[in-house]
Image 1 (tube, rainbow, N blue to C red):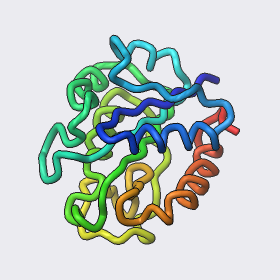
Image 2: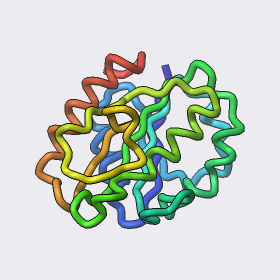
Image 3: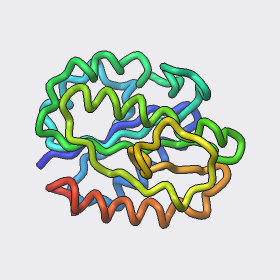
Length: 174
């Protein structure tokens, strides 16, 4: 089973979380910066994909990450990812941007679903402090929300729990 970890970042925090995830997930390929990819064709050769995205354009209806993900969303939606398991983690600031916390995860989630991927890695929102997020689906985030600005003391525990969850949801991870 081939599992890829991809990220885009502006400050380096999303890359740091991708590296930390890789250290916790045996069986996953080393993280790749999305800006180093020519195109997304390698997604089709993977069994599972884990994606990291920050939220920069708070309050926006589109292009919320402010990274190369924004220019690749349509390309993702055009892929055939039927049978692929996809999990998303997002970074945001729940204190300063309490009404837009980790909004960019939802945008990425929507395009991967459009491509036919099976979305996994949903996380209960009850342990987070925020007012609103476009990334909440029902009572859960559509991925792992990370707040390195206001809740960094919770990151290790959240990563550990999420990795254990992904090991159950994505074959090939241990």
